[in-house]
Image (tube, rainbow, N blue to C red):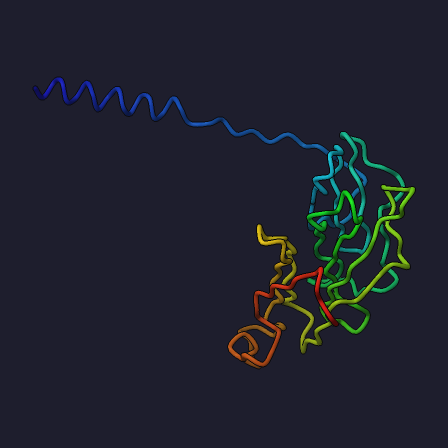
Length: 195
């Protein structure tokens, strides 16, 4: 009986070990990027990846080729350095039809800023810089702890974390203060949002 249990245990361990996936690293882009911090697919039926660079530029990888013309370049309106800059991108769930996308960055004053943009109608690989609409700008006391990552939830709302405002250990207790937007997970309905 002990031999039977031992054989069953050995078979289970063997099956478990042999069924583990093999994970490998394959570089897709090996040059042409500066401080990439986010990569997003618009899920619009195209084979494109949008790469967010902290220096204020969004580039497109189209089927493994990095396009020379940036999708968006806002380096003239951001504060870049340390933990600040252009930090995240999210495409509207209905992007294929309405061409809206959202970015999160530190503006020239250092404020964390959420903005809506639109892609040019006849040029799907170029954003229209003039279409910027600031949805939210939050002043912060220090240059670090900016938060960032934008994501749309299954409910169609945009979610993002703001960071506590920096300074090490949240010295102003922003994350615990219900009246502060710093140190929070925020959810907004971008289709019905009044600034």
